[in-house]
Length: 207
Ligand SMILES: C[S@@+](CC[C@H](N)C(=O)[O-])C[C@H]1O[C@@H](n2cnc3c(N)ncnc32)[C@H](O)[C@@H]1O
Image 1: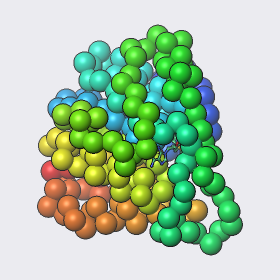
Image 2: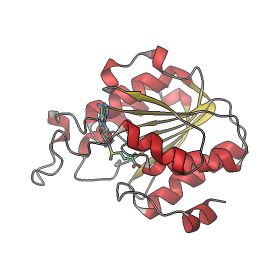
Image 3: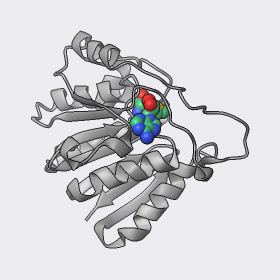
Image 4: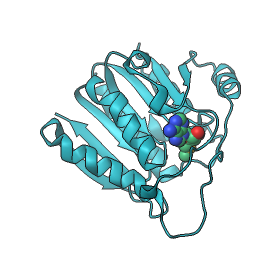
């Protein structure tokens, strides 16, 4: 199913590479097939490049799972010290600004159900903004605090055997992502059934 979707539909931005997109979607497809309980979240959805494929898979599987998307739609926040890579001044505050309306229009054009979209900085969200149960989460906020805040929001809502995929775990330009993942892993050892790094993704399966 995933390969068919990737062949049929082009990504609408370069914010995710094809190897990673395929991995993310395969993980999601496995969660769908295994009928893991709970909805689907993407924290750091930008213009919906990956979100559209998540929506297409939900539709293809005739699943009643809802897709929850989160972004500031103001672009990236300021970096913290954990994000300093010593590799130049890539990634500035305000970069990657997208529009909630454009994202929703893309879903409409694709003939997909309207996702639930929350426009906010992650640290201003509360558990009231989250699904009661999460089967699959994709975290793509790039920075240490963004990933840490994302984990804070999803952690208590992850269902048994849920999958969490975090982008940029192996990206030397964004070292904060790995730091935030490793801290969460360290504090949640008993809840994690498996962890692996593939391409630059961290892929976690819950007990
Ligand atoms: C690399 S882009 C996401 C790409 C998207 N996942 C995709 O596949 O197309 C990172 C996004 O995270 C958002 N972001 C980063 N930190 C955030 C924060 N703390 N609160 C809200 N949004 C944040 C940015 O606005 C940006 O749109």
